[in-house]
Image (cartoon, rainbow, N blue to C red):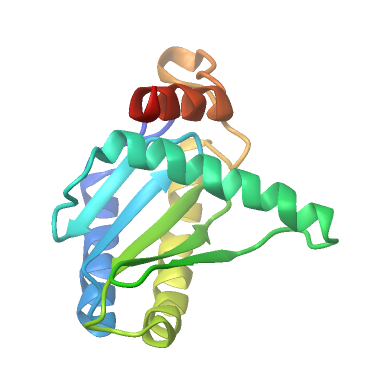
Length: 169
């Protein structure tokens, strides 16, 4: 686990986050849990190591969540708190954590979407509490987009476009 550029967490935060994610993976029988900052930075990975470019995945995940926020507004919803991408063999469950971080759960046929969603609800609640306490402590609320030294970070969609270009260009 590593801290994102605009905020970081203490060793105690790290242990709490890791404990909750490991318990969630055990209880849901999912393969992997990733935490992605809304700016597209990978914050943490627990479970089976992903077999893909995690940085590109994090950037695309944040762009996906952002695009779905816009889709929600278009149909009259404030936001979609969670998303599901279901494939034949591999699936993803994504959930908002503290309006700043996205929990991404990778799972296969060893479990069901229902179990992942059920166990994910408790994990999201626990992680939200940890992240809100951490953000309050360091003064990095949901709107904070500054990078190291207070410099603004590259826009989310611009970063996603770069990643898409790298993958398919």
